[in-house]
Length: 268
Image (cartoon, rainbow, N blue to C red; front, side, top):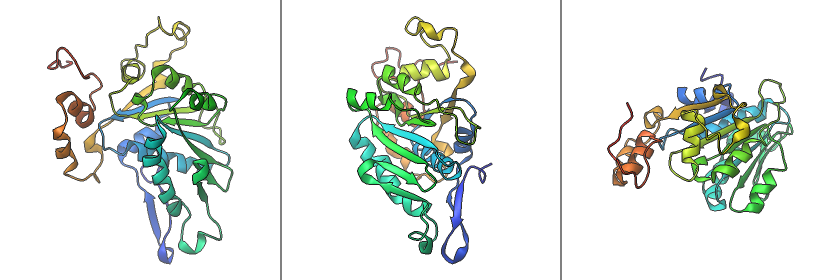
């Protein structure tokens, strides 16, 4: 399964080289058949990396695939996905001799876009202001990925999910809405309600009462121990955090938060 969800190509001398070999947990996320998936929890298991490479795989294999990756602010976007995609363009284009003659992908920095020769594309954006939000609501995508989705405002985040509605070019998937995130932030409680507890507030969303299908809102927990490539000292670096934030980022606990009255509360 890891091979089926990975990406590789011919390297120097024509030898096969793996560009992306997903961990078992990253495969679980990529292979999840549900339309709405929360891949989240601890910091460090490679959530954003997995989402980006899962989209590369779809774009390369399905002509005309269109996806959107979002961060809450442009500086956050610039320091993460834009920087990574500029570097990964080199990997996606295969052997050095092939990069100019037959490139598979082109990262267009001015448009914040990874464009593929088969007509597929991955657009990058942010939710800094109302104008930015409305721009995405006028377009339909095969997949939308709000990265660090808990930092978004809940209602714009949910409204974004309505734009992930196009059936994939190969006909195998309905529109996907992948939220990758650590706990903490304005939308954290909403994500807990929809994806983990499966108890959305039907008073706030009355039209959802007869349409909410828990099987389509799946939580894939991401834990620090899922990533065998992580620097062993990373865990120790989290010790400087306040206890509630440590539980969020080290253990992926969605039920702790700043100012919690019973900080020692544990669910049984």
